[in-house]
Image (tube, rainbow, N blue to C red; front, top):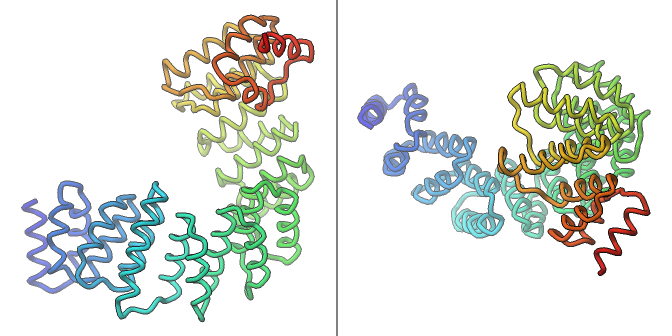
Length: 402
C-alpha cells in the first residue's frame, strides 16, 4: 500500500500521466481496491475511467459498479463502462435493477448519449431481457452507426425474436460481416438451421467475406441438416483465407464432419489442429466416433485426452458412455459413471442415465436398467433418445408400468 500511495502522490504533484499505467496496475490488486475507492475525489477523470475499464475487462463487475457509484461527476465514458459491467453480470435481475439505476442517473445528468454509449446501453438491456428498453434507446438515436444496428439485431437474436432480427436486418442500410453473422447465429441459436444456411448463401453471393465467427456459426447448421457439400466448401474457403488455424472453425468442422458421418475427414481436421485443440475439440471427436460405432477409437481418444492433461466435462462423458454402449462394455460404462462423481465431481444428467439404460438394455440386463430408470422420470429419459431395440423398449416399459 505504501508503494501505491507514493506513486499516487507523485502523480498528483507532477500532474503528468506517465505514472498512470503503473498506478492503475497497482490499484487493480484486490487489497488496494478500498484505497482506489477513496481516491475518487482527487483522481483525474481519465484515470478513473481507465480504472473502470480495467475492472470491467477483468470481470470485476461489482468493483466497477461500486467505483462508478461513488464517482462525483462521471462523464459519458464512465457510463459506458458501467453499462458494460451491468451487461456482464451473471444475475439478470441484478442487471435489470442496477442497469436501470445507472441509466436513470444518466438521464438526470446533462450528458447526451452518443452512438458508442447507446450501443453499450442497448447491449446491457438486451442481456438482461429488457428488449423494449433496448429498442426505445435504438429508436431515439437519430444518428445510428453500424455497431448500434448490429447490437440491436444481436439483441433480438439472443432473446429468440428472429423475426424482428430479420426485419431490422433488412432495414439496415450498410450491412457488414458482423450484421450477417448476428443474423446467422441467431437463426442457429433458435433452431432455424435452413434459414441460417439461406442467409449465409445470400451473404456469400453478395461477396461479403465471412470471418471465423461466421463460419463457426453456420457450420453447426450444416451439421444439423447433413449439408456435407456446403461444409466441404466452407472448409475450402477457410483454408484459402487463412481461417483453418482458428480453433473455433476447426472445432465446428470436426463436429460437422462427425455428425455427417465423415469420420475420416473429422479426424483429419482434428489432427491438423495440433496444439490448438481445446476440450471442445476432444469432445467433438470423441462424440463423432462414438455415435458412428468407432467405440475403440473413441475410448482411446479419451485416454489420450486425459494423458495430455485435459479434464473431462459432462459432454465428454456422454461420448464415452455412448462408446461403451456400442462396444457392449457394461462394466466399463458403470465405472465411468461412478468416476464422473468420484474423480471429477460431475453430477450425472439425464443424458448419462439415458446412455446407461441403453447400454444395460442392449446387454439384456433389464432389471438393472429398470432400477436405473427409477432414479429419474421415465418419460424424460426416453425423450433423450434411448435407442434400445423395440423388444427391450417394450419390456422395460412394461416393467415401469407394473
